[in-house]
Image 1 (spheres, rainbow, N blue to C red):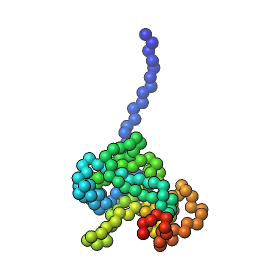
Image 2: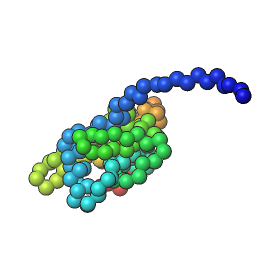
Image 3: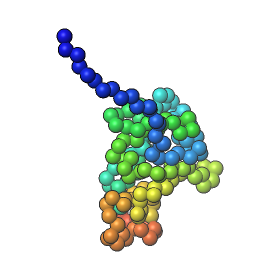
Image 4: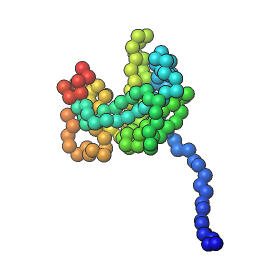
Length: 150
C-alpha cells in the first residue's frame, strides 16, 4: 500500500463586503414591490448591459435563480444578486430611492466608476472604457435619441 502525502490547508471564510450598497429606503421600496407582485423567495438582480446613449445601461429585475459566480448578500432584509461582469462596473455604487411627492419616486444609482452619464441617468460610460474622448453627455441635459428614455 502506498501512502500519499497531502498538504491540506484550511482557510477561514471571511465574508466580503457587498459590491453595491442599497439604502434602507430603496430596500424597503423594493421589498414592497416584491410583496405587491407576490414574489416570495426572489432576490433583486442588479446588472449592467450594453446600450443606451453612453455605452452601458443599468438594470434591475427580480430573479429567483442564482447563477454561477453571482455575488449574493442581504441589504436591509432584501436579498441581492450581482454577476461578476456587472460587479466590475458597479463596485462601490449606491442604489437609493428618492420620493419626489406622494405619488412618484425613482431609484437612483450613484456609481463612482461612471466618468459620464446621459441626462436621464439610465446609461453611463465607465472608467474602463476610457475617458480621454470628449463626451457630449457628460454635462447633463437631454440624453438625445440614443436611449429612448424621453
